[in-house]
Length: 245
Image (cartoon, rainbow, N blue to C red; front, top):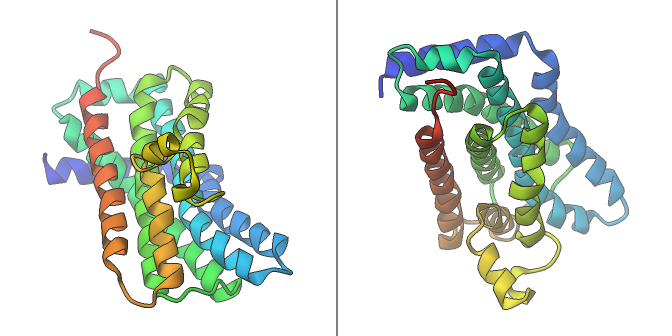
């Protein structure tokens, strides 16, 4: 992998996004708006907001980054830009790393903004450090970026990219422990949830919610989410190919 080519790819993606304010607004503002809406839904039950809000602070960035990344990357494919880039002396790892870096930088801004609003404005009460919330939210956003890059290889249109959301995101959302503790699920569903990265994202947020210090479980959860993001990026590089011979 060549660092200069990776940075050049990231810079090109960021320049394109700069001219797409609606996409930037989707990435940066939607998680904040959803957290704010949730705060006032549970206006009379602040403890419920603290419990659910911490989990969703990690889930919302994952979902938005998945949608934006998959659609933006597919647009590159359908417009022929990706085809031309692959014909150049640019390695697949350089290309994937460049996309991941560009969207990862936006994920940093998105996660920081959502965490700052949730803790500083909406009064999300957590026992641990807000910096740990930010860390998990950032890892979740990077995981969403990696998943979006990966599934874009299997979609032929932007509509198909959106259709991957029920298949990739919704099962994780239902089994992550947000609606019911995972240890109360059917044993088969609990085993499936143990293999899904969003489960560890929610567990990591709950560790910050209840424990003032960094726990071993928190470290494990953060490493699992980060490892899954790296694994999916590797798979994305492996599936990257030209459409024409």
